[in-house]
Image (tube, rainbow, N blue to C red; front, top):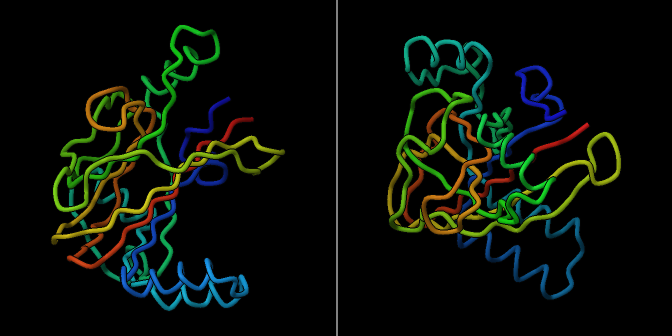
Length: 211
């Protein structure tokens, strides 16, 4: 079963967001390439991270009912350098998975897109509300792999880092089977605004688990 209800997705399917200073993140990449220890590289990555607001259930309720983004610590969430949210597999996304299994389609889901739409995610969604395409925000192929959640390699994972060249309030993210535009959307999520400026890097790690 695809884990898509709020409770099950929060446990088995998730999207992780991390915001970085691009120049500082490059130092971590250079250290990794030059054979520095994993612990040292991890510390450099943490030093490159910038805080963002991680919303809670009360934020999601207020957002769904009133379409507002209330970044009030403790009440609606908290500031963190690693924000994790539940993902929503869309109705079309479930069809895509079924079509992959029986060979109706062989187009893999490979792309992550981000945008500035604020309407709450819905199973009927087929696109992002307002996909971003400029100044480093354009969708593109993610690094895809299989990772472990409950059993060995039961979870599909996509990772993509967007290097920003402008200022945006990123509020939505989705998975697509086309790396440039259009195509079919497997999953979408909406979150509290991540305010980015030129010189930032936004890393999205999206997981969909099966059991």
